[in-house]
Length: 177
Image (cartoon, rainbow, N blue to C red; front, side, top):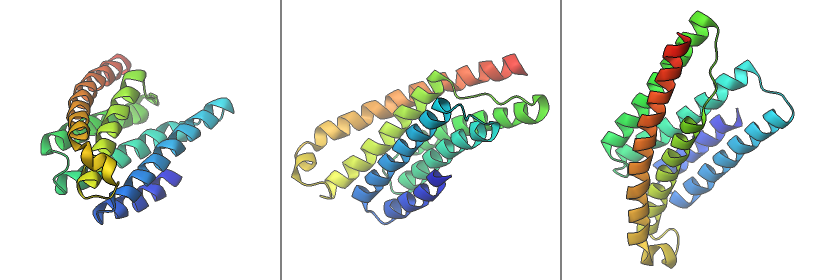
């Protein structure tokens, strides 16, 4: 639940062009997600509610950041569409299985990998924008071409992985339908 509050603060900083604090809060959100999963598994406290709220928090975080970044001209519209459609289809399929079959599918490895690369693309996009505005000092400003290249590569990889993960989830939904 803390990730929802952290997301609100992160979005505030992003809307107000404070890219340094946005990156700090994205990092905190990421670490809290990792720690939450680690402690839930290590203590065997995995719950049906947790299986729903954790991916919902991930999806809300990604969608919120991507929408803001698209309106700021940092993320292209096609990236927003692919990311949001993927998450909407996965969420709809999950809700269907939950209501009709009483099945809650957990995230799989390819889905987690896709979300990692989407998150990395978002983070590097914000980092590159902050570097252009001088918020990260001289080092990133001098190496902005490398940051831009990394951002382009991550955008491409995240879209490919998002599509692969969507197909993977669709296969799982059909199998459990």
